[in-house]
Image (cartoon, rainbow, N blue to C red):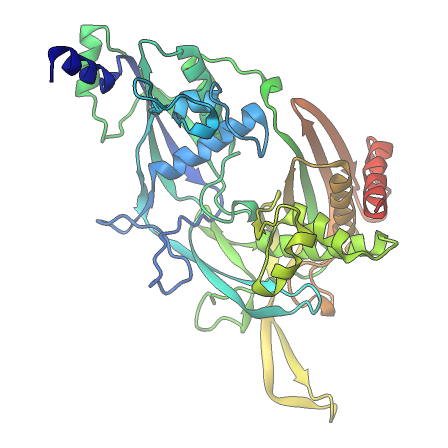
Length: 512
């Protein structure tokens, strides 16, 4: 090989070195607000889905890949909206990197990079305390019979709320990079953690995995300065120590953000209810050997067990009632209309027996689709626990059934009992908002019961106030509904606009 050929060969495979001019280290303490499942994928676990553990200690492991995926998705959605692909010059690709492909119309020839490396380094995190697991049972309910579907029971191992993870990020700013763009993208992404708008783990749309970061610590090192280079080399990356904290990541990074730049479209419903009757959501795990046969589901909050209305239970109730509402409004009784609207909002997974309906249900022949409706878990405050004894009756003789005595421990209301329901629908259409309003009405009036044993009068709620925030590409509209007591009338700030959403639902289900 001649010298000219050798020189050409070296040029073809020459690597582009990263000329790093500045490093910014950011740390924060992540706190779980609701139970979280960071699955390990262990098929031999005693539960259907077990937690991911540190290989050395009995501490939970939160991988840097999980954090990166969550905040990258949030950044992309903030800039472009939900269900929109990334672009090659946006904040997410500049911050996290991208791999070019032929279909992206990029030149994948020798002499050109096939992508760029992430400018953000995210470390794995180990929980500050040993794992305190919480077990949850779930089951799929048949919408027709309202009983448990065959072979559809599962159980999960969850991290308790209050578990803390120390987070560590390091931003590399290169000589040719756009520093303001990198800082803006990082500020938006971490602000999602700060506001509690990013969830981790599985079943995020059913209330699990909610978290927040309360305070931040920021160090900046200018590597063009000799002393600061030494300071970075001596920095104890593995050790967390006292340092001035910031409650706002935007102020810590000296970045200003405009809320109008948020391109997400959503409808958020924040409602306060009280219990109009006892409530019982069965827990699969008894609190002690002497516990009643059936106890209400409880979850640990701030070290104390409190009763909760789980997001999975509420979502199932809302889905079944939504089906009933649409079937009632549909004059032609077209079952496919109901399935299309319900599946678009609540998602679906087709079984083998349903595969023949794929073309009718979804034009893209999808076998599964994630829910666009997020139903958060609600904690019940100010309640009373009472045990009730019950007996099964022999329908033939009219007497008690032998050996069928059992006791239950539902939650009973007090004068100041309350629980807050939080729903969020992404990319809502007007008719979908109308359907949520009708579901809210049924919950508000006690017509829609939640939990078990609703046939004996349990599970009825009574609405007190609700705030509905509708955001469409930076423009926000707020509606409020207040009812001080069941005997008083509703106070609505814009009833006509809310009625238009319900009218849109009626038109949608009857236009075909």
